[in-house]
Image (cartoon, one colour):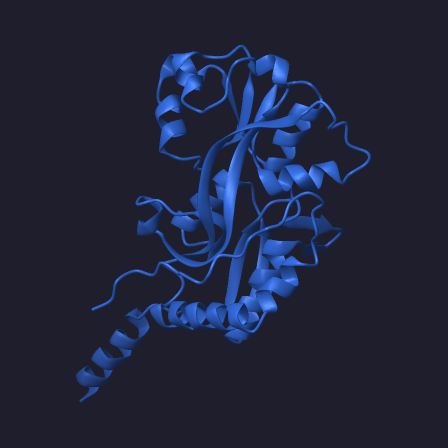
Length: 268
């Protein structure tokens, strides 16, 4: 009997323990999605995720971390969720995708004279460019750009930056000629009177994809994922998602809300 009880206790202890305090990897600034004010955070991603987690009776903890480090922390089981995550097959091994909450459009934003004659992403490989482009290290900008970055000759025109804030600073300080940027973030720049943005324009679209909240498959249970999916559908249907997005108006641009279509791992 004692051995049987020991076996039962061993089985219980070997089961994974899932927390109801979900740790979010978060950057200092990626407006209008993420903005830090002292010790507090706001922005579209922050408010949407806070409300989603609240709906299933859990809490959200913010862990400040640049994007590439956040991806490493996900692998190590030290983070539970990232925002603004686009889907690809490799990421589906680590994440469940709840949402989507936006169709993201990535543009090359920069000085027109530095990219004269370029009108499409393919030309960055075929024709090259004299302009230097900053992009976020660890971000996914689509298969076309991945192909370009895997070419040693083409790769020399790109600079890999640890955070969106640093990427923007390099452009506005004249250290690079262009950046790969979310078009909504660009329109947010234009609302900031103190930023010298007049010379920088969206030149062409590089990539478009749905973006989701990515939950760590190692640290978030399948039950929690199902609850999160249902909660997202509810918040979308009752107008909560739209109401949060409307708190961040962007002159000249409107964020479109896709219908719920979460991507969860298959279950038996």
